[in-house]
Image 1 (tube, rainbow, N blue to C red):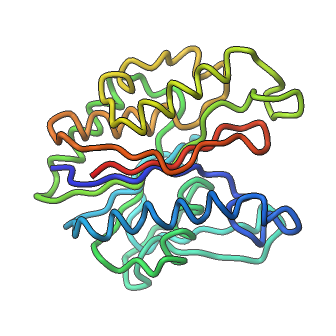
Image 2 (spheres, helix red, strand yellow; image 1 turned 90 degrees about the horizontal axis):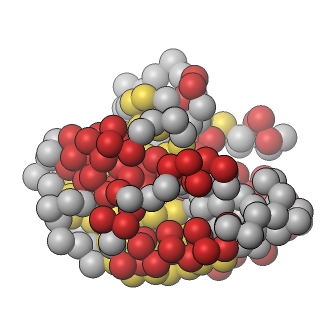
Length: 237
């Protein structure tokens, strides 16, 4: 059963070495992410599953110990999902899970076994929801770390250029995540999310499926779009 969840954005810019001179701009987001992981630790889960968006080669399960890297972003920095003693995988973590691994290492996570799951943007809502239900049934006390960004179309300089639909979409996402509104997340418009380049849509719907019977309370810790991309941090407990 799901006992806690943390929702965090997944831009590699969260890692100060990647952001370089722009690093201070996301200090408040990093602090909120650290606070959200504290909620996960306080829940004392038997299993932590990290869910994040992934391209084709990063989809699927990533066992504890799987390595990740930010070398593709010009930074000589490696991470590992959870304990070095895990079996790991021949595949590298997708960027979203590498950011999660960095966050977990930064906070010294050692409270429960960890697994990673990369989900692709095309995964239908119904399938995402079922994946979440399956995850919640895996242990008596399950926690989720859910990585994903809202729209990438908030400003003219945003990766997806400006779209007037982006701000209302992000506002509803932030409201739903902050309120632990399972029904609203399950009902997200998948086509609109795709058009607005919202990478978090599928992971959020996995969370919704996992939380259907959990009766959790949400808290919104951070919501902003510093680079024209919506970033949301929330906790469910």
